Structure formats: C-alpha cells, structure tokens
Length: 84
Image 1 (cartoon, rainbow, N blue to C red):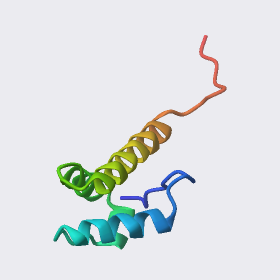
Image 2: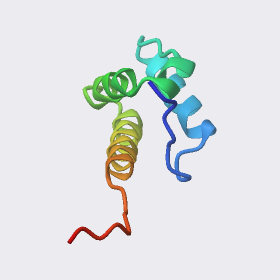
Image 3: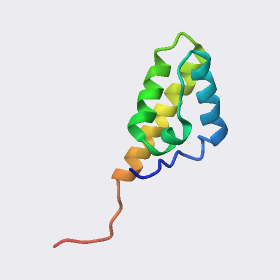
Image 4: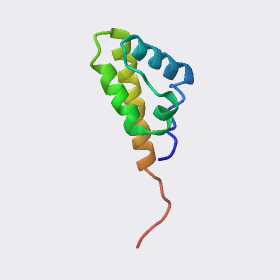
C-alpha cells in the first residue's frame, strides 16, 4: 500500500502525540506502520475513540477525519477528457 499522505494539518508531532496518548492507555502504536497502512491507522484511531480520555478521543476523531479526506482526495480525479 502507498504511504498515507496526511493533510498539512496533521504533522508528525500530531502523530507522535497520538502515539503517546495511546501508550498512556496501554495501547502500543507502530508509528511507521500507521503512516503507511491506512487500515492499521483506522483501527488505532477507532480504538482511541473508545477511550475515556477526552484528548485522545479528540485526536482520534481528527485523525479519522484526515484519513477520510485523504481517501476522498485519492478517489476523486479531475479530467479534462471530453467524451462525445
């Protein structure tokens, strides 16, 4: 799978922060895998949404939103081709 291209709003610092918030709850996150495997990133973010920690839930929701936007951007392609 291609590397995920998180939006400019999601920085490496945001991802590392998410990783440590997850670690604080006892959930280990493989950051390099999270950056290249969309399915794994979604599973991590979903698990974070289940947390009782407000900041972790917020970061998880933001991450899921970025993943959704990235998927929409990659599936939507503009074309100048005209078919008659």
